[in-house]
Image (cartoon, rainbow, N blue to C red; front, side, top):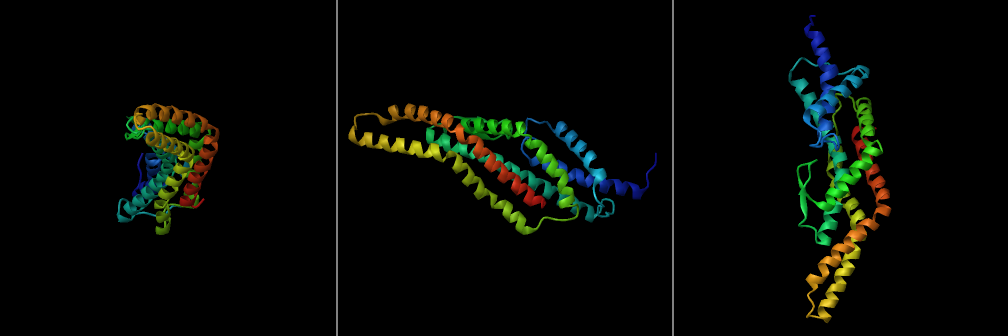
Amino acid sequence: MEFSAQELTSLLTQYFLPFVRVSAFMLAAPIFGSRLVNARSRLLLALLVTALVAPGLPELPAVSGFGLDTWLLVLQQSLIGLAAGFAMQVAFQVAVLAGQYIAMKMGLGFASMNDPASGLTVTVVSQYYLMLISMLFIVGDGHLLMLSLLAESFYTTPIGVSLPLALLMDLVMTGSWMFGAALLIALPVLTSLMIVNIGFGVMGRSAPQMNIFTVGFPITLILGAFLIWFGFTTFLGNYNRFMQDGFMILRHIWNI
């Protein structure tokens, strides 16, 4: 079987450029970009998604082999995929940051472990929250929704259309949203433990002979664990709220 240079260029445009966006998104997105998913499985999934999406795409811009215009398009598609994956990763980091807030206030800041999904060292509370929202995300078919939006992005943000600079600045500003959403989850626990610590301070002034650190640490730890358990009554609502915000940011990036 022989292919002409024009046919090879057409195949390059039709399959390789969409594959760049898909693979870049899966590299940065939660669940797919986790270290628990090996590179071969991620590559195979990216190839499968590209094979399903590419034949139905609208007309793509013409490229001249591996010239400068092709590499600019590759860079453009990589940036689009990475930006969208980063937006969803920020939504997942809300739970990690909330766990950090709570763990520091409980006195569990020293109880850290290596997160196998990201390779970073996080507190055990953060790891617990991260596992919880990962299960909720998969059970709620969030990963399928991400793939659906990824396929739709090729029509709303076709290959050859770059992201505006203002949109990239909005993506950077999602960091402030992440801190606010994490504080929303952790605020009940932080407020309750702050009141308890104020009570310990009053006890320490009224009874100096009492060792507040010896008495206060186990009480703070037990109370913090109880507050985390009690906070699960509102956790699902908070999860739905910040995950919807995360998908809204993703839709905004892809102009969906």
